[in-house]
Amino acid sequence: MTATANVTMPAGATPPASPRDPGVKRRRRGRFGDRVLPYLLLLPALAAILVLLAWPLVQVLGISFRKLDIGQLVSGKTIWIGFDNYTNTLSDPEFWTVTVRTLVFTAAIVAATILGGLLLAVLMRHLDPVVRIIVQVTLVLAWATPVIATTTVFQWIFDEQYGILNKTLDRLGFHGFIGFSWFSSGASTLTVIGLLIVWQAVPFVTFSLYAGIIGVSREQYEAAGIDGASAWQTFRAVTWPAIRPITTMVTFLSVLWDFNAFAQIWAIREGGPDGGSTTLAVVLYLKGIAGNHFGAAGAIATLMLIVLALITGRYIQLLVRTPEGDLK
Image 1 (cartoon, one colour):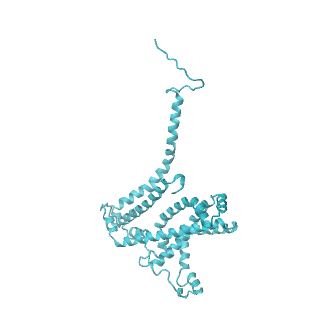
Image 2 (tube, rainbow, N blue to C red):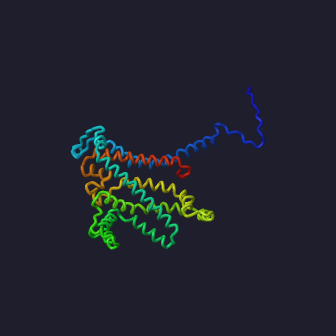
Image 3 (cartoon, rainbow, N blue to C red):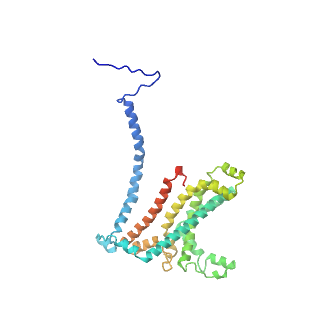
């Protein structure tokens, strides 16, 4: 005979579900599907990234280990030379001069862009609505103007004979600027190019920071005023915590964009005079497209990617340390 155990359960208790209960299996399948679904939705974007970014990156890395000039390109020969392209590049003193120039140039224009965008964003919060709209439309127009068109306008402004800047300075009493050439040296040329890049980059930074500023409730500013906080104290205690994550983001993006700036530099003086305004992006073009030394250009591109990867890694590190999007 089979013994049956009588289990006494408290009143109102729900009996445990049988392991063979189909409802339990459906719930397990549902939980598994909920976990897998986000990754399935990401697959198309991941495939596009691999095709459009990862594969070209692998190609550039492979080219950097080859001797690939116009002769090898036409004949189709593959000549592997190991790290020779990197050795030749890193042992060239001119490469290190251009690298330092690029880093200093990038740091200067990024700092000017962030500072200018921050000042304009704070200013727009205090402007009359009509004046604010005028400023915003002006910023949009500056942002939307094509790079080459803006570059041409800046060349006219800084022209030594017909430029409006020299004539204006002369009328203000600075007669030494009559016929002054703003493109006579690498430093002055980079200054003009930096102003051009800042002019085009400030609108994006301004609108991004202004979006963060208007997200701060008016009650917080009123509370700071009641506590007797000055304008600077209010900015530090109320405004800055709200826009700090956005400031970090736009700084990171500005570094990436300005480090790779090419069109403005090439359109102004093609890296001149005498290479004084040449940056890594221009060297990459001169080696690869103009000089047909694609292996050397691949090595330079890889080194530039390493620098940008270090910057990106620092940004990701900040994001990982950030609780709920508030960068510490």
